[in-house]
Image 1 (tube, helix red, strand yellow):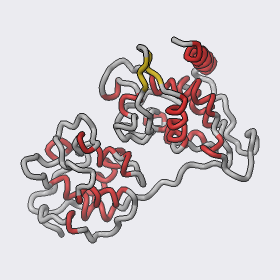
Image 2: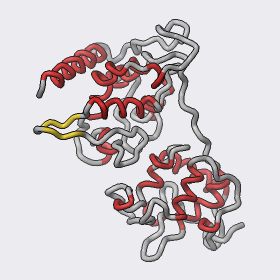
Image 3: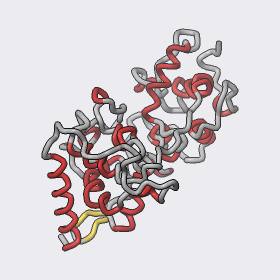
Image 4: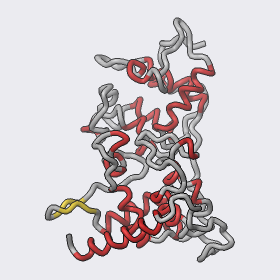
Length: 302
């Protein structure tokens, strides 16, 4: 390990030890915009966040091994690299002389992507904090698992402290609203209509977003609403490029995920059906009028 990496490791260890001294105490940051240092009327680049703090104390958390190699037991970087198109948008690691790391240029790109997921004006509302936090503690559903059982967890505290270094006038990035009416009329039938030589999505995902329709009829509004809510954690509203719903069924040769037990529905990122769904994720497609590529005879429309 070179001297630079050793220095970073020491800083990271110190930061983690300081935050872990009292797991049950209140987070060591002030979220009051009026008392935060560096307040100004204009939002600084990358929300005014501290890059050195990020590299020393936050970025190493993304590398931390969770005890396994797949699913909720693996590290953040295993799923959230740019190849996987996950919202965190981490760069692929660099391997050199037996060491695996991010270069400064890669860390700066990571920094810019991560900054999109934080809210310095109210750190506790940041997507970066809510995804790994247990739902029982106020976190969000996260397909990668929940690593923190409370807001007093040392990793939560370190990241929250970093977010609080940002410009207090910098809020959360606006979240695009995806339309429920379009989902019910045009998206939900996709799950019941397989492509040639493939099984329908509801074959595997019937307990989630691909609930089968009632016999000889359409889904009820309540069934569609439940499916919509279930699918929401696979969406990154406004960002089709990092939406798992559009990435998992895409063939790897076209940039899709390496693993998807249900096979591949699209063999090109420009597949017309996928492009129509991407328009919905961007918030552009609304209402119950479906483009031709999303018009299905089954199940029968009400």
